[in-house]
Image 1 (cartoon, helix red, strand yellow):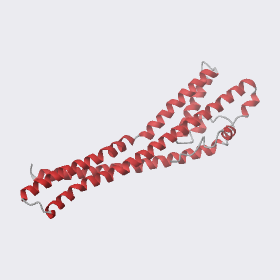
Image 2: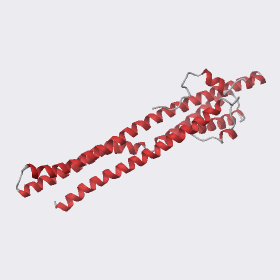
Image 3: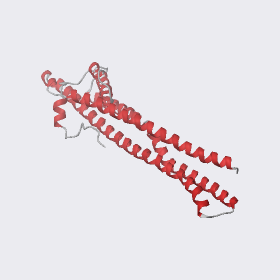
Length: 242
């Protein structure tokens, strides 16, 4: 194989690793902005939770953005439809509300998982791509040394050292990708747990309000997100920390 083809393969390998690095940092920046925006939006909604004396209406929830607000909006929509539909039984409404929460949480999970497969692929394949470039470079270097008819240290060290650069670059690309993947997977799990916790809180408020309405009109005002939040364990509506 000619020197031109060998150099093209080695340079192509290095170029692919550079592309992997660019994609990795672009995904890291995009996911970091997504996480920061979701935290800010959820914090705004949690601040308003203690001010609501009853289940928030759909009109109120449309004023908020973020994963928690979308879950709450899906729940409020399902609860209103179930309670004012053909069947207004508590158990039926509860099942509809739970299914609505489950579907919306799954949607939010898919949003947070976007791009993670790419990070995982880059983290696992980059070292092997770099190793391929190193092996090919060493083969080319040994062929050149054989053609030169000399095996002195000066002749061997230069080409072999250049070939090993590909492995170093492959590892340098893989480490940030793996670290970023682990961080965002952890963040996704924490966010899912927070959304499930919020769904439980919302369901408890809805059922308590419905049962209160069925017993006495006055008791419907006695439940609130503030009181339910105070009765929950610390960190039940926690901010995501990794």
